[in-house]
Image (cartoon, rainbow, N blue to C red):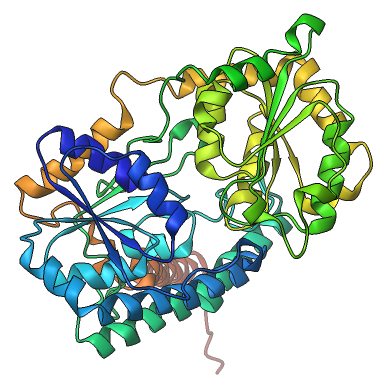
Length: 493
């Protein structure tokens, strides 16, 4: 949806925007059509059997990326087997490809079309893959790797573990994905632009990061990466009367509302859902729970739930508008980055139950910045823990105060979507010239680490030290000879 929102801004400036979507994602198409705008054309490609259950996504980050490798391989093959679509794209006169940085099939498509590409990066840049592709430094000494529970203040053992996690992510998950996409590029006769075996650097003209420094641990970012902020957030719109009335129903008794949504990536298992229902039912607050029947695991149905009268289940809700409602007091979320930013934008404290990908780390960061409480999925089984955590969010002033502080940090005078569109237009103006790429990729790892310089300086220092030692030794011997009196020898007759 980040790409679509930037496209909307570009269309408002007179550009034509063509959106390519899989026909196995009807929910995504419905969402796209609900946000339709002038100058938007939607094209589908045949990707039957690409869809997978949310519960299939592993919670371990390495296994998660392995699953995504399989999905993206299938998607790429389906895309390049759709000859009608490829011919249509080839004849459409496309000037630039705006793509999700995590979509490897889109990278193959950029090479096939021979047009410049701009990556939209909606996830943290702490993955080793982005360090290589975009020359983004990943200082593991103080930046936690994805999948670790650390903060910048790490102990020695935590830094060792952080380095090991970074290597594991790179060698066991990301590099196999890149090799797989490289093989597909050879199969389809295109150049895989996101990864050069010789340099490992992305050939995209620019990278748009939809992150905000308000929620990121500070680290150096090269000029090719433009951190514009979350493009999906916006001032809340009024809710339908039914939702407005429900959320406001507890105010007379001093009870703020609670919103629960576990997002679109990952899902709770059956026992976790039952435990969540039990905990939420124990609250006196009105609870709006987004729980589509299609997301229920196994044979579970909504009729199997024993819910309190304070809970209202819905299939979908305008999340940003719900969080911006005056009665909203707390948000229970899986910790997807867009959900976190919408909570920050509306100054709503969060209970984060990270499931997969970057979500567990986002949960830790919410706790680190003081506007949230992180929980692990296994902790849902602890009786009264979720209830007590939500009550803390609602009653302890520090959570609301810190959420308000995060809201102020996110303040901008120009919307992130506008800044993102500026980047795209700059690439169009310069013809996709990759002029902001740093020289890091032209050097070997030991040159980037200055090991060769340190070795040369060590040799020079050793040579100087040896010369000084020899000179000192020579001076010492000369003085010794001068100071020792000569022995007289008397000839005897």
